[in-house]
Image (cartoon, rainbow, N blue to C red; front, side):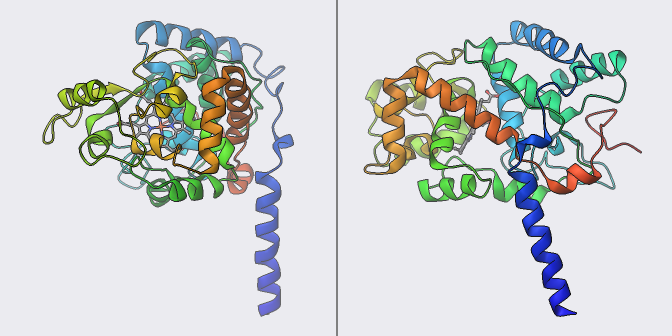
Length: 324
Ligand code: HEM
């Protein structure tokens, strides 16, 4: 009996690895016949959204990341709390922070009218994140498609899996490795911080307590202190890459080398003698190498599949709620 149970568990674990590491479950032309307008609709809606507010590109990219790190890329992050359902929106990393839901809703609405019940919210978010990068002048990559939307979410996993800005390098590495992502993937994906903004509460410790290797230029530090006082102003914003905040370039890595990464976690990547610091150096010198690896790592992150969702998942009618 015990043997049967352990065989069953072993089978499940092996199946999980098999599913999560096999992107061939997804395909680039998944909607070619069932919803030929899907990619064009997502692109044009993202165009409008980013033209209306430049930051939206960054916000959508981050939403996708927070989705994928919790039970795979299954749009669990988009689910609302209801009296009978607990979603991920109140997790520490998400509360008062993640944004862009209305853009995904707008895309979903158009696609439900073009091809009802066909395009998953998880795929919409994954493609929208790719388009966000392009709209900020970054690289193009093909997005494998065919994800299903979850019927569950996990607040606990959101709290434990999504990295926090004051984590140590070891802690950050652990959270990426748990998702099957390497140190190189982590450094490349952190390059997403070449766009977007952070709230004072996310970088207060970094500017008042300091961090090893971030002996930053006094002008930059005093500007940050102006935006982010020791008490109050928690929601005041500063660009993650102050040199080119809406351009998807490699300035983020040069900033880190100059001790001007905004978050502790950004500076941690350059910890003296670490493997990640060599990668930071490489991307600071070679923007194309950064783009290439970022594209590959985004595909890898986008392919984190929850095996359960793959079996029990659905195409939600409304990205905020599971289907009845
Ligand atoms: C290495 C671990 C990471 C940590 C600790 C981290 C942490 C953070 C924090 C604290 C913020 C600011 C949130 C706020 O103050 O409201 C932020 C913003 C952002 N993060 Fe990360 N992040 C990490 C990796 C990533 C990855 C892998 C991506 C995407 C591939 C990403 C994309 C973004 C973007 C685009 C923003 C700006 C969002 C906006 O302006 O709305 N981050 N991140």
